[in-house]
Image (cartoon, rainbow, N blue to C red; front, side):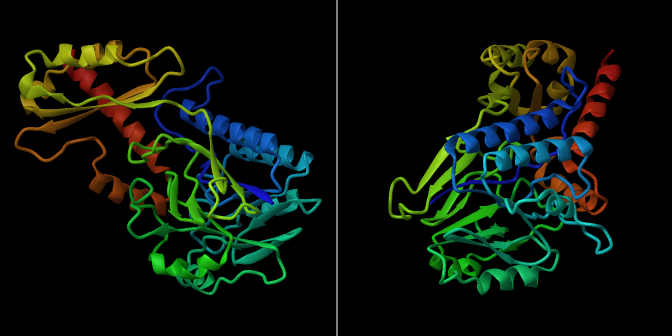
Length: 377
């Protein structure tokens, strides 16, 4: 009995202002391509079931493009006879009761018992000798906490799996707080020890929490706060092997947009900061897909930072999709266009209004850069 576990695909997510050859936001296309590759790999592995542990979509009103990619992927799984079980995450769950849940569409898409979209309340799904207890995100934290605290395997099943979309204390955030997200204590999962495997979603990095508990992480790296530990992809879980076996969980990497964090530049030890940044740009490998690049400049005066010619920077990093320069100004706190406290505030504010935080911040950065260029001419 084998399953494939992946999560946090965030179909419909957008960032930056770059577009692909079809005029679609490039980072949105990256997310769709990663999802398609994950489906391809799952079909190649031919598991008994594919499990998605939440945040299938980036919002609870996904675009027609996001819906098409999702339904096409599910249809490919169904055509090969592979069941698909997906739970609602906080991004896919409406914040108001009157709003219809997008998973209602997935329910109607299921005509042969191979698609199980779980939302609203915990539900057990039976697939042959496997029982899956699905605990979706809901806006009432007590329902999720109680659903996990009282979780118990099905005694009539040979294998039992628990699926949930929650954060756990001590593992950090997705990349800033999110409106509607839930973070629970590790003790909440004490009952999970009785399950053969616990498939978690919400944390965007791969994390094996316990022998039988894992976050698969997001497919794409959606922010610099998302540390991939060198892995982005899906998990193949061999339930028959058992969690004491080395073959229990096998990660399968998925090709995604490269993210490169360059070594920091110490401006106090650099005579020509502009040239030092240009030299750093020469070390970036641009032979493959255009990478996302981040460069921290430390110990820089506000005067020196203001003299940086952003147009020359753009030229130096011309082979990159995006370069993020972060300054650490002497005598001031760490400065970035999106410091953690600002991101946390904007996340809670924009999330409540249904605004995509990454797109919101990226647009702000774009207009700030344009203003900076105009002022320097």
